[in-house]
Length: 345
Image 1 (cartoon, one colour):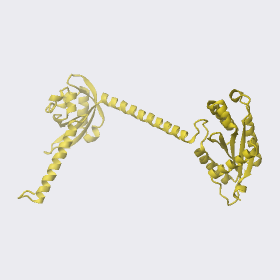
Image 2 (cartoon, one colour; image 1 turned 120 degrees about the vertical axis):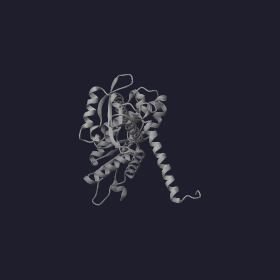
Image 3 (cartoon, rainbow, N blue to C red; image 1 turned 90 degrees about the vertical axis):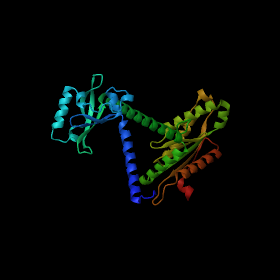
C-alpha cells in the first residue's frame, strides 16, 4: 500500500478503475455494433453515434469517428416519416411504447431513401437532459438476415433428419445380419424377451425353432462362397414367408437360423417345423443344380404355469440349439422336439 493512503481509498480507486474499464469495454462494443446506434437530443441533434451509422450515411471508416455529431437526424427522414416521428414524439404514451419496431424511410448520404427499422429509448444524461438512444436497422439487411436465419434453421432440421437417419441405419446394422437382413442374436434375444413377457401375461405358450442346414459347408466349398451367400439369402426369405405373426426370424451366423414367437401349441409348432423342412427342401437348380438340401431342427415349447416366471431368452434359445443337435445325431433332415418343463424339471 502506498504510504499515506488508506485501505478504503485503495478500494475506491480499484472500483473506479474497474468502472472505467467496464465503461470503456461497453463503449467499444457499442461503437462497433453491427447496427446503427446514436444518441440524439429532443430536437433530433446527434450527440453521439457509432461506426455503423456513419458508414450508412456514407462516411469512410477512416473519417467516421464523430462525423455525424451536430447533424439533425430528422433531416435524414422522408416527409412522411418525419411527420410520423413528430406525431409519435408528441403523443402522451412513453417513447418506449411508441418507438418499437417502426418502419421509416431514411436517406443515406447519396440521397437515396431506404426502409429502416427504428427502435428508441428515452434516457436522461448526467445533467438531467432528456435524450433518445436510437437503433436503426436497414430493413433490407434485416430481411436478408431473417432469410439466412430461416435457411439456417432448415439446414439444421435437415442435419437433424440426416443424423436421425444415420442413427437408425447404425442401429439397424448393429441389430441385423448384414447378409440376410434378419435379426441378429442381440435383436433376437431382445424381441424374444418381449414375446415371452407377453406370453406370460396372456398365459399362452411360446416356442423357439432352431435349424441348421445339412451339408451346407460342403455345398459352400463345392459351389463357391457367392453361391453359398445367395443360398442363405433364399432360405432367409423363405423363413420370413412362413414365420408366425408376431414372431421373429434370426440368423445366428453360418447356416443357423431361429424362428421364435407365439402364442402357439404343440400341434401348430409341429406343423411349422414340417413347413420349414419343406421350404428348405425346395429345389434350387439355378444355384446348386440337383444337389439336395435339408435341415436339422430343434424345437422347444414353453407353456406358462401359475407362479412360474418366463425363461430367459438366451436359455430358451440354447435349449432349442441342443434339441437341434439331437436331430443331427438322429440322422439329419428331421425334427427333435422337447418341452421346457422337461428341461427344467
